[in-house]
Amino acid sequence: MSTPWRDEVARVAGLARIDLKPDELDRLAGELEVIVQSVARVSEVATPDVPATSHPLPLTNVFRADEPETPLDRDEVLAMAPAQEDGKFLVPQILGEDA
Amino acid sequence: MSDTLVDYDDAVARYDTVFGIEVHVELGTRTKMFDAAEQGFGADPNTQVTPVSLGLPGALPAVNGTAVEYAIRIGLALNCTIAESCRFARKNYFYPDVPKNFQTSQYDEPIAHDGWVDVELEDGTVFRVDIERAHMEEDAGKNTHVGGATGRIHGAIYSLVDYNRAGVPLVEIVTRPVTGAGERAPEVARAYVQTLRDMFRALEVSEARMERGNVRADVNVSLRPSSDSPLGTRTETKNVNSFRSIERAVRYEISRQAAVLDAGGQIVQETRHWHEDTGHTTSGRIKSDAEDYRYFPEPDLVPIVPDRAWIEEIRANLPELPAARRRRLQADWGYADPEMRDVVNAGAVELIELTVAAGSSPAAARKWWMGELARTAKERGVELEELPVTPQQIGALQALVDDGRLTDKLARQVLEGVLAGEGDPEAVVAARGLEVVSDDGPLLAAIDQALAAQPDVVAKIQGGNLGPVGAIIGAVMKATRGQADAARVRELVLERVQS
Image (cartoon, rainbow over all chains, first blue to last red; front, side, top):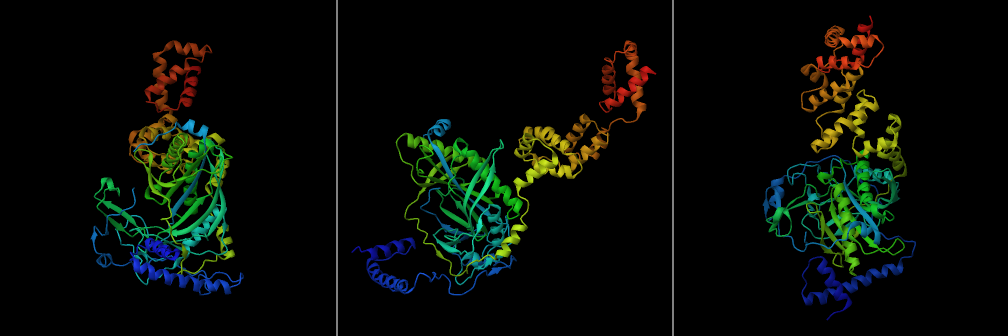
C-alpha cells in the first residue's frame, strides 16, 4: 500500500541503489517515520538562536601541508578488485548515460 | 542525428541570448585535495592513490592548506567576497570514477562568492561578467571505455578506471546569467574562459593547459524573445574544452534552440554533449528528480574559517594580473592601442617581453614577431610560440642589426637560418658569411668597377644630377650579394665621383 513514508523510503532506496522487497518497504516506512519524528522534536526544543550543528567538535581550519606521502602499491591496490586490465580497474559496462 | 538550425544572424535578430559558464580548474598543488597522494599529469595508472583516493573504509580526508590558499587567490582575483566560514559537503551519486560514491564538494557555502571579471574582446571592447561563486571540490578518476567506437561509452562492453585524478583539487567558478552580449555571446563566452585561463597562469595556481584538461567548461545557453522577457529554458553543454569549441558550442545552441522555438516547440532542460569533430551537440541526460544528489555537510572535515589577516596577506601578495600587466607593458613599450591589441591577439605579449629583456627595442621586437615571424607561423599553420626560435635569439639578431653588422635584409636571411635549425644568429652569420661588408676596401673596388661600366654616370653626378647614384648602389649591392650597407656605399660613391 502506498503511503508518503513508504514512497519516501522507496525513493531513497532507489537513489542508494538498494533493492528493497515490499515487506521491507513496509517495515522501513514505519521506522523512518519514527526516526524523522524523533529528530523533529529537537526543532521544537531548539530556539532560533541555536545554529544547526554539522560538527560536534569546536574545531576549524584543520589543514594538511602540501607534502606527498608514499602511495599505495599498485599491485596491492588492484588485487582488491574483481578484475583489472593494463594497470586499471575493470568495471562492467556503464549504462544509463548516452555519451 | 541532425538538428534543424536557424541561420545565426536570423537567430540573434529574433532572440536574446543568455548564457552562463561553469569553469573547472585543476589546481597545481603537489598533492590532492583531501589526501597526500602526489598528483600530476602523465603518471602510470593508479600509482598516485592512497586509501583516501580510493575511498577505502575508514580512510579519513584532510584538507590541503595550499589548495585552500589557491582557491582564495582565485576568489580575490575574481573580486569575490571570501566567506567568513564555509564547509564541505557530500554530493552523492554512483559512477565508477567516483570511488567513494560521493564527491566532496561545497554546496551552500562556497569559499568565494559575488565577484566579477572584466573580459576584453578582440576589438578592445570590455565586457563585465558577474561571478556567482567559486567553490572547492575534487576531481573524479578517469574512465576509458573499451569495445565501442573510438573510446565512446556507447557500444562499449566494459570500462577501465584510473584513480590518479580522483581527488585532484578543483575550483569550480560559476557565472551569473550573462545578459546583454547579444550576437557577440559566443565571442564573450570564449573570451571569458580565455581570461580565466590567463588569470590562473598569472596566479600560479594551475598550469591551466586546456589540452590536458586542466581547465574544463560547461556552457549553459537559453534564448528569450527579448531582453525584457523572463529567462528561457536552458541547456547545459558539458566538457567543452577548447576556446574555439566554446565559441562554436554557444553559436550552435543559439541556432538550434532558435529553430525549436520558431517551430513552436519547447526547449528541454537537459545536458548536451559537444562533438568536437562535427561541431554539434547531442542530447544527453534529461535533468529530472532522479538527479538528487542528497547533499549534506561532510562530517569528516571541519569548517574552514579563513583568518582575515591571512586573506589580506594573500591579497597583498597577488601577482600582477594579465589585464594590468598588458596595460603596464603597453605604456612601457609605447604601442598604440591597435598595435597592442594585435600583439595580444597574436599571443605575442610574453615573446615580446622576453625579446625586449634580451636587449631589443620594443619597436624592433614587435616588428619581428608581428612581421616576419607572424608570416612564418601563418605559413606553417602554428602558433608564434611554437616556432623554433627563442626571444633570446631574436634579441641577439636585433643586436647585430643595431651594431650595423647586419642590414634588415641580411637579418631576415639570418632568421631563415635560425628557423631552419642552423643555430644562433651569430652561428648562422658565420656559417652563411652574411655579415655586412664594413671594410671600405672591397666596397671601393666594387664601386670603381660599377663606375667603369657606366662612364656617363660620373659626368651626370658631377653635373649635379644625383639620380643615377641609385644605379651604382644597386650594382655594388649585387656585386657584394647584398652584404653592403647602402648608406655607406652612397657616401663612398659621392666621395669617389666628386674628388
